[in-house]
Length: 350
Image 1 (cartoon, one colour):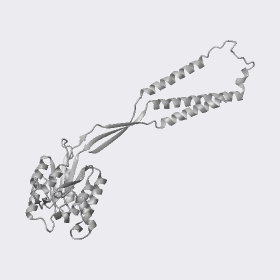
Image 2: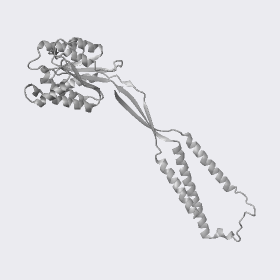
Image 3: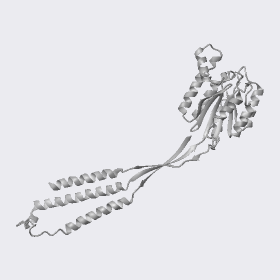
Image 4: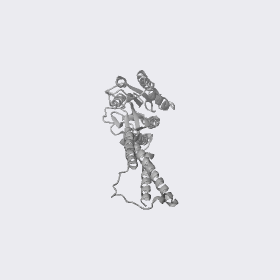
């Protein structure tokens, strides 16, 4: 399932009340300190240290300069403590960046359904290249590929792993080289046989288009979910044998399941006829699908536009909220304040 997300980021403070708590503690500590300075504990005469003839010290320039430096250092220390306290209050309040991702689950599914019977070999490689071009035009769709002859093989199920899809289509392009029909290239034949293995499970017929299309309708999962479903069918409608599903029955089955079919038609030199083409076109267009020739240069653009005009149902998902603490410059201010206080205390002790 494809996730389409819109992200919003904003800043917040988780515990703003912590600022008031820390500042209240600081104010109480300052008040206590101020009170003790203003109201020193009265010492008994026995505890007092008396210094005789010290009144003149206040008039000594060196002593007065020392007192001024001492007071200045004290105020610098108070400033450092206040700065550290304010920064600690800000950090304690836990400033954070909050990211809210509003998600929608994109629900557009596309199955590529390819006839790999002998009469289609001349066009198969071209069809796969068309499919590859389609993949380059998609964004978020899930894609599957099924190939069929008398039986079907799922090359890959519905997936939005476009790297895997492109690798498989590249492999199919190489394997479905028309050289197999007019050359003795054994390596090319082996590639073709490996890729189409599982599509000739019965010898009672070939190019059973209705059965191949019916199998493609079965590749859509999550049947109970409202989704946009499309099949791109490539065939020459040159039926040989008795299928379980006729082309029209398979088209009706897809229509009952809400699946839109777009058709690509290709007829080799030894296959195809006006009647077969007309039957194919009428079945596809009768179910509301679009019909194109394999060599139509505008087919890819038209088909992509048609698929994308089918509005995918977007299912809202619960928003994903992530939060990360962000101390920002407050941590540096706190460290700076503490460092300043320690430096001042060291100087005062000297």
